[in-house]
Amino acid sequence: MKLAKYCVCIALFIVSNVILSAQQDKNCPMNTNSGSFGWQKCKHCTLQPLTTNKSRNLIPGPTKVCVISSHQRLSSLFSTNLIAMLGNGHFTYDVMEPKRCFHSGNCRNIQDVLPDGCRHDDPVILLYVAAGSHKMTLDLHVARMVQNGFFDLAILGGDEKCKYRNSSEFFDFRYYHSTIIMHDTGIGYIPLGPRFEFERVFIEQMKRAHDRRYIYNFMGALSTSPDRGRMVEAIEPDILSKWNITNSTDGFMHIIDKWKGEATSVNGYLTPDKYRDVLLESVFTLCPSGNNVESYRLFEALEAGSIPVIAKSHSYKDSECVDPLEPLIASGAPFPVLDRWQDLPALFHLAKTDKEWVQDLQCKATAWYRRYLSTKLSNVEDVLMRHWKKRLRKSYRDFSK
Image (tube, rainbow, N blue to C red; front, side, top):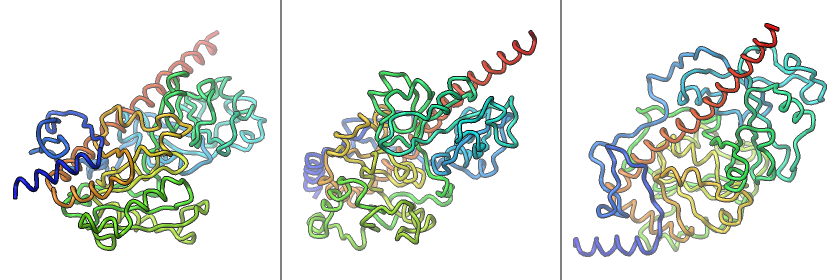
């Protein structure tokens, strides 16, 4: 019996080619000579959600930051103050709509730009959203304001296809990583994080992997990328049945044929609460490419303690954002990155038959996620602090003259 189980594990390893790497720590070391897929069982690993009861009531930092943004979803890290919870603790954030002159280009100075409630000596972040996936140039009046030092930090959002190749001329950070853009220009990268609609998960809400109802889930539109259709084909019921996986009971699928602009229940999508409940009940969350392989879904899965699964398929390899997940993989992200979606049934079977392995993987994923976001967001706050202090010193010198 033991020999048969061993042979099954070896076969699964050959079939799936799952790339799993771990961020080593004192509680959960990686050992390539033990455990399924080379993972050592972790005796003291505990689930670590981003938010604990202690941080339920956020104590404001000493300095309020004015975040100028017209895009509610891309502002999620700031509007939920998740960056304040996981950053260096110096700031708290208030997202504000820009004044009318910002869009018309008639702002003459920083005071004209600042929304009501934001003082001239407050740190100011501009979150500029790329207007469409084919636009490759920055609005001239926005470029002028950035170059004139109106903002302490400028972040580019919405450039899912990496069209803004010269973004480092105006921006300090950008959402959506591209190895070529990052390495050639030195611009910083900021992860998407969860959406503002996704309610924070607390420790008492997070189930262990072996207590969850579903092995996998996918909720989304197929039209966003061919990658999604290939993924669905790889887990057809007749294929899964060969691996003792039942689509109707082991998985949760809610598929919309065409993206309709907004993920609302009117357009056929699940409500945010239902979506969150499914993630909390799923061992794995399938994360195929959309317009970009990095998605809110990936971070929301991790926050819910559901392990994201990605495939380096054609959509990933042909992405205009070269190596979009390089920051995650380079940091030792401990979740499956498949060579192809056809390897999913083998992964599901292993999770179903080796509960200790999948529980260990869940522990590593939640611990890594908190460290990863904390590192990236603290870096953003460090740069903001330097730029803000530099502006204040300059203002003091100008005033003293």
